[in-house]
Length: 474
Image 1 (spheres, rainbow, N blue to C red):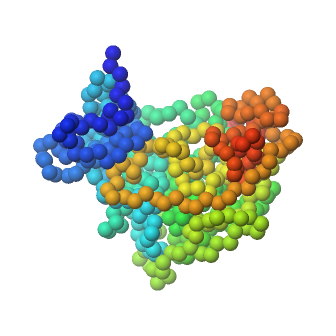
Image 2 (image 1 turned 90 degrees about the vertical axis):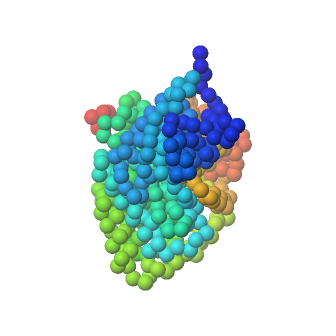
Image 3 (image 1 turned 180 degrees about the vertical axis):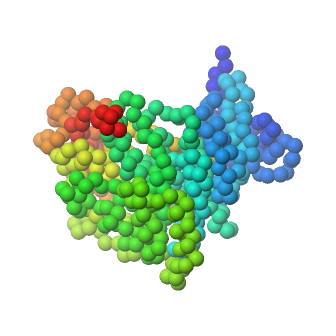
Protein backbone atom coordinates (compact mmCIF):
# COMPACT_ATOMS: atom_id res chain seq x y z
CA UNK A 1 0.00 0.00 0.00
CA UNK A 2 1.43 3.37 -1.00
CA UNK A 3 2.18 5.84 1.76
CA UNK A 4 1.94 9.58 1.63
CA UNK A 5 5.31 11.15 0.86
CA UNK A 6 6.84 13.28 3.56
CA UNK A 7 7.07 17.04 3.26
CA UNK A 8 10.78 16.67 2.75
CA UNK A 9 10.23 14.21 -0.08
CA UNK A 10 7.84 16.55 -1.85
CA UNK A 11 10.22 19.45 -1.44
CA UNK A 12 13.01 17.37 -2.99
CA UNK A 13 11.18 16.39 -6.18
CA UNK A 14 14.05 17.43 -8.41
CA UNK A 15 16.06 14.96 -10.45
CA UNK A 16 19.89 14.88 -10.24
CA UNK A 17 19.87 17.29 -13.19
CA UNK A 18 18.23 19.98 -11.08
CA UNK A 19 14.76 19.87 -12.64
CA UNK A 20 11.59 17.84 -12.72
CA UNK A 21 8.22 17.94 -14.44
CA UNK A 22 4.69 18.34 -13.13
CA UNK A 23 2.03 18.27 -15.79
CA UNK A 24 3.05 20.56 -18.63
CA UNK A 25 5.53 22.42 -16.43
CA UNK A 26 9.23 22.07 -15.71
CA UNK A 27 10.37 22.99 -12.22
CA UNK A 28 13.44 25.21 -12.16
CA UNK A 29 13.94 25.68 -8.45
CA UNK A 30 12.29 25.60 -5.05
CA UNK A 31 11.19 28.97 -3.73
CA UNK A 32 9.98 27.84 -0.28
CA UNK A 33 7.65 25.50 1.57
CA UNK A 34 4.70 26.12 3.87
CA UNK A 35 2.18 24.17 5.93
CA UNK A 36 0.00 23.25 2.95
CA UNK A 37 2.19 23.59 -0.11
CA UNK A 38 5.56 24.30 -1.67
CA UNK A 39 6.12 26.91 -4.35
CA UNK A 40 8.52 26.41 -7.25
CA UNK A 41 9.78 28.58 -10.05
CA UNK A 42 8.58 26.91 -13.23
CA UNK A 43 8.43 27.24 -16.99
CA UNK A 44 6.19 25.57 -19.62
CA UNK A 45 7.66 22.47 -21.26
CA UNK A 46 6.61 23.72 -24.68
CA UNK A 47 8.12 27.19 -24.21
CA UNK A 48 11.48 26.89 -22.43
CA UNK A 49 12.83 30.20 -21.22
CA UNK A 50 9.45 31.89 -20.89
CA UNK A 51 8.24 32.94 -17.51
CA UNK A 52 9.05 32.35 -14.76
CA UNK A 53 5.78 31.16 -13.27
CA UNK A 54 4.91 30.19 -9.69
CA UNK A 55 3.84 26.55 -9.33
CA UNK A 56 2.31 25.76 -5.95
CA UNK A 57 2.16 22.05 -5.14
CA UNK A 58 -0.01 20.67 -2.32
CA UNK A 59 1.57 18.67 0.49
CA UNK A 60 -1.60 16.64 1.05
CA UNK A 61 -3.43 14.52 -1.53
CA UNK A 62 -6.63 16.11 -2.81
CA UNK A 63 -6.22 19.16 -0.57
CA UNK A 64 -9.55 21.03 -0.97
CA UNK A 65 -7.87 24.44 -0.60
CA UNK A 66 -6.31 24.18 -4.04
CA UNK A 67 -9.46 23.79 -6.18
CA UNK A 68 -11.10 26.56 -4.12
CA UNK A 69 -8.17 28.88 -4.75
CA UNK A 70 -8.14 27.97 -8.44
CA UNK A 71 -11.86 28.69 -8.78
CA UNK A 72 -11.51 32.01 -6.97
CA UNK A 73 -8.62 33.12 -9.17
CA UNK A 74 -10.63 32.17 -12.28
CA UNK A 75 -13.47 34.39 -11.10
CA UNK A 76 -11.42 37.35 -9.90
CA UNK A 77 -9.63 39.00 -12.81
CA UNK A 78 -7.87 42.11 -11.64
CA UNK A 79 -4.45 43.72 -12.23
CA UNK A 80 -3.73 43.53 -8.50
CA UNK A 81 -4.61 39.82 -8.17
CA UNK A 82 -2.29 37.10 -9.55
CA UNK A 83 -3.32 35.49 -12.82
CA UNK A 84 -4.04 31.76 -12.81
CA UNK A 85 -2.49 29.95 -15.77
CA UNK A 86 -3.07 26.29 -14.99
CA UNK A 87 -4.25 23.82 -12.37
CA UNK A 88 -4.28 20.09 -12.15
CA UNK A 89 -3.24 16.96 -10.28
CA UNK A 90 0.24 15.48 -9.92
CA UNK A 91 -0.10 11.71 -9.84
CA UNK A 92 1.83 10.00 -7.05
CA UNK A 93 1.59 6.50 -5.54
CA UNK A 94 0.18 8.11 -2.37
CA UNK A 95 -2.55 9.82 -4.37
CA UNK A 96 -3.10 12.83 -6.62
CA UNK A 97 -1.59 16.08 -5.34
CA UNK A 98 -3.23 19.31 -6.58
CA UNK A 99 -1.12 22.08 -8.04
CA UNK A 100 -1.67 25.62 -9.28
CA UNK A 101 0.38 27.68 -11.72
CA UNK A 102 0.17 31.42 -11.22
CA UNK A 103 1.79 34.62 -12.20
CA UNK A 104 5.26 34.98 -10.67
CA UNK A 105 5.49 38.07 -8.50
CA UNK A 106 8.75 39.68 -7.57
CA UNK A 107 8.35 41.77 -4.47
CA UNK A 108 8.27 42.10 -0.72
CA UNK A 109 5.47 41.71 1.76
CA UNK A 110 3.80 45.01 2.58
CA UNK A 111 5.32 45.31 6.04
CA UNK A 112 8.81 44.33 4.85
CA UNK A 113 8.51 46.80 1.97
CA UNK A 114 7.61 49.62 4.36
CA UNK A 115 10.32 48.67 6.85
CA UNK A 116 13.28 51.02 6.52
CA UNK A 117 11.48 53.35 4.11
CA UNK A 118 10.27 56.84 4.92
CA UNK A 119 6.86 56.95 3.24
CA UNK A 120 4.39 59.78 2.92
CA UNK A 121 0.66 59.47 3.46
CA UNK A 122 0.11 59.84 -0.28
CA UNK A 123 2.46 56.95 -1.00
CA UNK A 124 0.65 54.76 1.53
CA UNK A 125 -2.75 55.61 0.08
CA UNK A 126 -1.40 54.90 -3.41
CA UNK A 127 -0.62 51.35 -2.27
CA UNK A 128 -3.81 50.83 -0.23
CA UNK A 129 -6.20 52.02 -2.96
CA UNK A 130 -5.41 49.14 -5.39
CA UNK A 131 -5.87 46.66 -2.55
CA UNK A 132 -9.34 48.05 -1.95
CA UNK A 133 -9.96 47.73 -5.70
CA UNK A 134 -8.84 44.09 -5.60
CA UNK A 135 -11.26 43.46 -2.73
CA UNK A 136 -14.04 45.19 -4.65
CA UNK A 137 -13.41 42.85 -7.58
CA UNK A 138 -13.45 39.87 -5.21
CA UNK A 139 -16.67 40.94 -3.52
CA UNK A 140 -18.18 41.72 -6.91
CA UNK A 141 -18.13 38.04 -7.87
CA UNK A 142 -19.72 36.95 -4.59
CA UNK A 143 -16.46 35.99 -2.91
CA UNK A 144 -14.43 37.00 0.14
CA UNK A 145 -10.69 36.72 0.72
CA UNK A 146 -10.91 35.95 4.48
CA UNK A 147 -7.19 36.48 5.16
CA UNK A 148 -6.36 40.08 4.25
CA UNK A 149 -3.14 41.22 5.95
CA UNK A 150 0.22 42.74 5.16
CA UNK A 151 1.87 39.35 4.73
CA UNK A 152 -0.62 38.55 1.96
CA UNK A 153 0.29 41.66 -0.01
CA UNK A 154 3.35 41.75 -2.24
CA UNK A 155 4.76 45.09 -3.37
CA UNK A 156 7.15 45.47 -6.30
CA UNK A 157 9.98 47.69 -5.03
CA UNK A 158 10.64 49.32 -8.40
CA UNK A 159 7.15 50.78 -8.88
CA UNK A 160 5.27 50.07 -5.59
CA UNK A 161 2.72 47.93 -7.47
CA UNK A 162 0.78 45.90 -4.83
CA UNK A 163 -0.69 42.45 -5.35
CA UNK A 164 -3.27 40.82 -3.09
CA UNK A 165 -2.29 37.15 -2.92
CA UNK A 166 -3.07 33.84 -1.20
CA UNK A 167 -6.75 33.19 -1.87
CA UNK A 168 -6.47 29.68 -0.40
CA UNK A 169 -8.64 30.60 2.60
CA UNK A 170 -11.20 32.44 0.46
CA UNK A 171 -14.84 31.60 0.03
CA UNK A 172 -17.50 32.05 -2.62
CA UNK A 173 -21.13 31.16 -3.15
CA UNK A 174 -21.61 27.42 -3.40
CA UNK A 175 -18.13 26.51 -2.15
CA UNK A 176 -18.01 23.57 0.27
CA UNK A 177 -16.75 24.42 3.78
CA UNK A 178 -13.07 23.91 4.53
CA UNK A 179 -13.47 23.20 8.23
CA UNK A 180 -16.12 22.44 10.82
CA UNK A 181 -14.87 25.08 13.24
CA UNK A 182 -17.01 27.94 14.50
CA UNK A 183 -14.78 30.38 12.64
CA UNK A 184 -13.40 29.69 9.17
CA UNK A 185 -9.66 29.91 8.42
CA UNK A 186 -8.27 33.30 9.32
CA UNK A 187 -5.52 35.11 11.19
CA UNK A 188 -5.90 36.19 14.83
CA UNK A 189 -5.45 39.93 15.19
CA UNK A 190 -7.28 40.66 11.94
CA UNK A 191 -10.67 39.19 12.87
CA UNK A 192 -13.59 41.61 12.92
CA UNK A 193 -15.49 42.46 16.12
CA UNK A 194 -18.53 40.58 14.85
CA UNK A 195 -16.46 37.45 14.18
CA UNK A 196 -14.93 37.56 17.66
CA UNK A 197 -18.31 38.07 19.28
CA UNK A 198 -19.79 35.15 17.36
CA UNK A 199 -16.90 32.91 18.37
CA UNK A 200 -17.29 33.86 22.01
CA UNK A 201 -21.00 33.13 22.00
CA UNK A 202 -21.00 29.92 19.98
CA UNK A 203 -17.59 28.30 20.28
CA UNK A 204 -19.16 25.42 22.22
CA UNK A 205 -22.34 25.20 20.14
CA UNK A 206 -22.31 22.17 17.80
CA UNK A 207 -22.83 23.14 14.19
CA UNK A 208 -22.44 26.89 14.76
CA UNK A 209 -20.52 28.51 11.91
CA UNK A 210 -19.68 32.16 11.28
CA UNK A 211 -20.08 33.33 7.70
CA UNK A 212 -17.60 36.12 6.89
CA UNK A 213 -18.68 38.85 4.50
CA UNK A 214 -17.11 41.82 2.73
CA UNK A 215 -17.14 43.83 5.97
CA UNK A 216 -14.72 41.32 7.52
CA UNK A 217 -12.26 41.85 4.68
CA UNK A 218 -12.55 45.62 5.11
CA UNK A 219 -11.88 45.42 8.85
CA UNK A 220 -8.74 43.36 8.11
CA UNK A 221 -7.69 46.00 5.58
CA UNK A 222 -8.09 48.59 8.34
CA UNK A 223 -5.85 46.58 10.67
CA UNK A 224 -3.30 46.32 7.86
CA UNK A 225 -3.41 50.07 7.23
CA UNK A 226 -3.15 50.90 10.95
CA UNK A 227 -0.05 48.74 11.28
CA UNK A 228 1.43 50.18 8.09
CA UNK A 229 1.08 53.69 9.52
CA UNK A 230 1.97 53.11 13.18
CA UNK A 231 4.07 49.94 13.14
CA UNK A 232 1.70 48.25 15.62
CA UNK A 233 -1.70 46.62 15.77
CA UNK A 234 -4.76 48.70 16.72
CA UNK A 235 -6.45 48.16 20.08
CA UNK A 236 -8.90 45.27 19.85
CA UNK A 237 -12.61 46.01 20.16
CA UNK A 238 -13.81 46.67 23.71
CA UNK A 239 -17.46 45.87 24.59
CA UNK A 240 -19.47 48.66 26.27
CA UNK A 241 -19.69 46.57 29.46
CA UNK A 242 -15.94 46.87 29.91
CA UNK A 243 -15.84 50.60 29.18
CA UNK A 244 -18.50 51.17 31.83
CA UNK A 245 -16.41 49.24 34.35
CA UNK A 246 -12.95 50.42 33.30
CA UNK A 247 -12.82 53.52 31.14
CA UNK A 248 -9.02 53.26 30.91
CA UNK A 249 -9.23 50.34 28.50
CA UNK A 250 -7.53 51.37 25.24
CA UNK A 251 -9.87 51.84 22.31
CA UNK A 252 -9.55 53.10 18.78
CA UNK A 253 -10.84 56.47 20.03
CA UNK A 254 -8.06 56.69 22.63
CA UNK A 255 -5.42 55.23 20.32
CA UNK A 256 -6.18 56.67 16.85
CA UNK A 257 -3.45 56.32 14.22
CA UNK A 258 -2.71 60.05 14.22
CA UNK A 259 -1.80 59.80 17.91
CA UNK A 260 1.20 57.64 17.08
CA UNK A 261 2.26 58.86 13.64
CA UNK A 262 2.21 62.04 11.59
CA UNK A 263 -0.37 60.67 9.19
CA UNK A 264 -2.67 63.00 7.25
CA UNK A 265 -6.28 63.35 8.44
CA UNK A 266 -7.58 61.82 5.19
CA UNK A 267 -5.92 58.45 5.76
CA UNK A 268 -6.44 58.53 9.53
CA UNK A 269 -10.17 59.03 8.99
CA UNK A 270 -10.40 56.15 6.53
CA UNK A 271 -8.57 53.85 8.94
CA UNK A 272 -11.01 54.72 11.71
CA UNK A 273 -13.88 54.04 9.30
CA UNK A 274 -12.49 50.61 8.37
CA UNK A 275 -12.00 49.70 12.04
CA UNK A 276 -15.51 50.70 13.03
CA UNK A 277 -17.22 48.20 15.30
CA UNK A 278 -20.38 48.69 13.23
CA UNK A 279 -19.87 46.67 10.07
CA UNK A 280 -22.26 48.87 8.07
CA UNK A 281 -20.15 51.95 8.87
CA UNK A 282 -17.15 50.54 6.99
CA UNK A 283 -18.82 51.05 3.65
CA UNK A 284 -18.00 48.92 0.61
CA UNK A 285 -14.62 48.14 -0.89
CA UNK A 286 -15.60 50.21 -3.93
CA UNK A 287 -16.39 53.22 -1.73
CA UNK A 288 -13.12 52.83 0.20
CA UNK A 289 -11.15 52.61 -3.05
CA UNK A 290 -12.83 55.74 -4.39
CA UNK A 291 -12.14 57.63 -1.16
CA UNK A 292 -8.46 56.62 -1.20
CA UNK A 293 -8.06 57.56 -4.87
CA UNK A 294 -9.75 60.91 -4.34
CA UNK A 295 -7.50 61.62 -1.35
CA UNK A 296 -4.43 60.78 -3.42
CA UNK A 297 -5.54 63.35 -6.00
CA UNK A 298 -6.86 66.11 -3.78
CA UNK A 299 -4.93 65.97 -0.50
CA UNK A 300 -2.71 68.98 0.07
CA UNK A 301 1.01 69.20 0.64
CA UNK A 302 0.64 67.73 4.12
CA UNK A 303 0.02 64.35 2.46
CA UNK A 304 3.55 64.47 1.01
CA UNK A 305 5.21 64.91 4.37
CA UNK A 306 6.89 61.79 5.76
CA UNK A 307 4.87 59.64 8.12
CA UNK A 308 7.01 59.61 11.26
CA UNK A 309 6.42 58.20 14.74
CA UNK A 310 5.38 60.66 17.39
CA UNK A 311 7.02 60.79 20.82
CA UNK A 312 6.12 57.86 23.04
CA UNK A 313 5.48 58.21 26.75
CA UNK A 314 5.16 55.00 28.79
CA UNK A 315 2.45 54.97 31.47
CA UNK A 316 3.68 56.12 34.88
CA UNK A 317 5.17 53.43 37.07
CA UNK A 318 5.81 50.99 34.21
CA UNK A 319 9.24 50.22 32.91
CA UNK A 320 9.04 49.13 29.30
CA UNK A 321 11.56 48.73 26.56
CA UNK A 322 9.86 49.75 23.35
CA UNK A 323 10.75 50.15 19.75
CA UNK A 324 10.74 53.85 18.76
CA UNK A 325 8.06 52.99 16.17
CA UNK A 326 5.73 51.02 18.44
CA UNK A 327 2.79 52.75 20.11
CA UNK A 328 2.72 52.65 23.89
CA UNK A 329 -0.55 51.22 25.13
CA UNK A 330 -2.65 52.71 27.85
CA UNK A 331 -2.67 50.85 31.15
CA UNK A 332 -4.96 47.84 31.44
CA UNK A 333 -5.30 47.19 35.18
CA UNK A 334 -8.66 45.51 34.73
CA UNK A 335 -7.00 42.47 33.15
CA UNK A 336 -5.70 41.20 36.48
CA UNK A 337 -9.25 41.05 37.86
CA UNK A 338 -11.17 40.38 34.68
CA UNK A 339 -12.74 37.20 36.02
CA UNK A 340 -14.93 39.23 38.33
CA UNK A 341 -17.45 40.25 35.71
CA UNK A 342 -19.93 38.67 33.35
CA UNK A 343 -19.45 36.90 30.03
CA UNK A 344 -19.35 40.27 28.29
CA UNK A 345 -16.13 41.02 30.10
CA UNK A 346 -14.98 37.50 29.33
CA UNK A 347 -15.22 38.49 25.71
CA UNK A 348 -13.09 41.53 26.47
CA UNK A 349 -10.49 39.23 28.00
CA UNK A 350 -10.28 37.40 24.72
CA UNK A 351 -10.06 40.64 22.80
CA UNK A 352 -7.60 42.44 25.05
CA UNK A 353 -4.97 39.82 25.91
CA UNK A 354 -2.54 41.05 23.30
CA UNK A 355 1.18 40.43 23.48
CA UNK A 356 3.74 43.05 22.56
CA UNK A 357 5.63 40.95 20.05
CA UNK A 358 5.51 41.14 16.26
CA UNK A 359 2.73 39.00 14.83
CA UNK A 360 3.36 35.49 13.62
CA UNK A 361 0.14 33.55 13.05
CA UNK A 362 -0.99 30.38 14.74
CA UNK A 363 -2.16 27.33 12.89
CA UNK A 364 -5.65 27.21 14.36
CA UNK A 365 -8.13 29.13 16.45
CA UNK A 366 -8.83 27.76 19.89
CA UNK A 367 -10.97 29.01 22.77
CA UNK A 368 -11.99 32.67 22.79
CA UNK A 369 -8.96 33.64 24.87
CA UNK A 370 -6.66 32.89 21.90
CA UNK A 371 -8.42 34.77 19.13
CA UNK A 372 -6.97 38.25 19.10
CA UNK A 373 -3.50 37.69 20.53
CA UNK A 374 -0.82 37.90 17.85
CA UNK A 375 1.44 35.10 19.11
CA UNK A 376 4.83 33.82 18.02
CA UNK A 377 4.51 30.18 16.98
CA UNK A 378 7.56 28.31 15.82
CA UNK A 379 6.94 26.89 12.40
CA UNK A 380 3.33 28.03 12.52
CA UNK A 381 1.39 28.84 9.38
CA UNK A 382 -1.76 30.80 8.93
CA UNK A 383 -5.01 29.93 7.23
CA UNK A 384 -3.78 29.42 3.70
CA UNK A 385 -0.40 28.69 2.19
CA UNK A 386 1.16 32.11 2.49
CA UNK A 387 2.46 33.03 -0.94
CA UNK A 388 3.74 36.23 0.60
CA UNK A 389 6.58 34.10 1.90
CA UNK A 390 6.65 31.51 -0.85
CA UNK A 391 7.05 33.54 -4.04
CA UNK A 392 9.17 36.36 -2.73
CA UNK A 393 12.21 37.26 -4.78
CA UNK A 394 14.83 38.93 -2.68
CA UNK A 395 12.38 39.78 0.09
CA UNK A 396 13.71 40.86 3.46
CA UNK A 397 12.25 39.39 6.61
CA UNK A 398 10.57 41.81 8.95
CA UNK A 399 12.89 42.64 11.83
CA UNK A 400 11.64 41.65 15.29
CA UNK A 401 10.70 44.55 17.50
CA UNK A 402 12.25 44.80 20.98
CA UNK A 403 9.97 43.42 23.65
CA UNK A 404 9.18 45.06 26.99
CA UNK A 405 9.24 43.68 30.47
CA UNK A 406 5.82 42.33 31.38
CA UNK A 407 4.36 42.72 34.83
CA UNK A 408 4.17 39.45 36.77
CA UNK A 409 1.39 38.95 39.32
CA UNK A 410 1.69 36.18 41.88
CA UNK A 411 -1.04 33.56 41.88
CA UNK A 412 -4.10 34.77 43.78
CA UNK A 413 -4.56 32.89 47.06
CA UNK A 414 -8.36 33.18 46.92
CA UNK A 415 -10.77 32.61 44.01
CA UNK A 416 -11.46 35.74 42.01
CA UNK A 417 -15.13 36.75 41.62
CA UNK A 418 -16.69 34.81 38.78
CA UNK A 419 -13.79 32.36 38.51
CA UNK A 420 -14.69 28.73 37.85
CA UNK A 421 -14.09 26.40 40.77
CA UNK A 422 -12.92 22.80 40.73
CA UNK A 423 -13.63 20.37 39.24
CA UNK A 424 -12.45 22.16 36.10
CA UNK A 425 -14.58 20.96 33.19
CA UNK A 426 -13.46 23.45 30.54
CA UNK A 427 -11.10 21.87 28.07
CA UNK A 428 -7.54 23.02 28.62
CA UNK A 429 -8.14 24.51 32.07
CA UNK A 430 -6.21 23.32 35.12
CA UNK A 431 -6.97 23.29 38.85
CA UNK A 432 -4.78 25.34 41.20
CA UNK A 433 -5.80 25.99 44.80
CA UNK A 434 -9.28 24.69 44.13
CA UNK A 435 -10.09 27.02 41.20
CA UNK A 436 -9.60 26.90 37.43
CA UNK A 437 -6.97 28.63 35.31
CA UNK A 438 -5.94 28.80 31.68
CA UNK A 439 -2.25 28.30 30.94
CA UNK A 440 -0.40 29.16 27.76
CA UNK A 441 1.81 26.35 26.41
CA UNK A 442 5.47 26.90 27.24
CA UNK A 443 4.59 30.19 28.99
CA UNK A 444 7.24 31.08 31.54
CA UNK A 445 7.80 34.30 33.50
CA UNK A 446 7.97 37.17 33.02
CA UNK A 447 4.24 36.86 32.42
CA UNK A 448 1.98 39.18 30.47
CA UNK A 449 -0.23 41.81 32.03
CA UNK A 450 -3.15 40.22 33.83
CA UNK A 451 -1.49 36.83 34.12
CA UNK A 452 -0.53 35.12 37.37
CA UNK A 453 2.63 33.17 38.06
CA UNK A 454 2.52 29.70 39.60
CA UNK A 455 5.20 27.04 39.60
CA UNK A 456 7.28 28.81 36.98
CA UNK A 457 4.40 29.18 34.49
CA UNK A 458 1.88 31.88 33.57
CA UNK A 459 -1.90 31.54 33.97
CA UNK A 460 -5.02 33.66 33.70
CA UNK A 461 -8.41 32.97 35.33
CA UNK A 462 -10.94 30.66 33.72
CA UNK A 463 -14.42 32.16 33.93
CA UNK A 464 -17.56 30.30 34.87
CA UNK A 465 -18.88 29.02 31.51
CA UNK A 466 -21.85 30.89 30.14
CA UNK A 467 -24.65 28.75 28.66
CA UNK A 468 -24.52 29.05 24.87
CA UNK A 469 -27.21 31.01 23.15
CA UNK A 470 -29.87 29.07 21.29
CA UNK A 471 -29.91 28.71 17.54
CA UNK A 472 -32.90 31.03 17.39
CA UNK A 473 -30.75 33.81 18.83
CA UNK A 474 -28.23 33.41 16.03
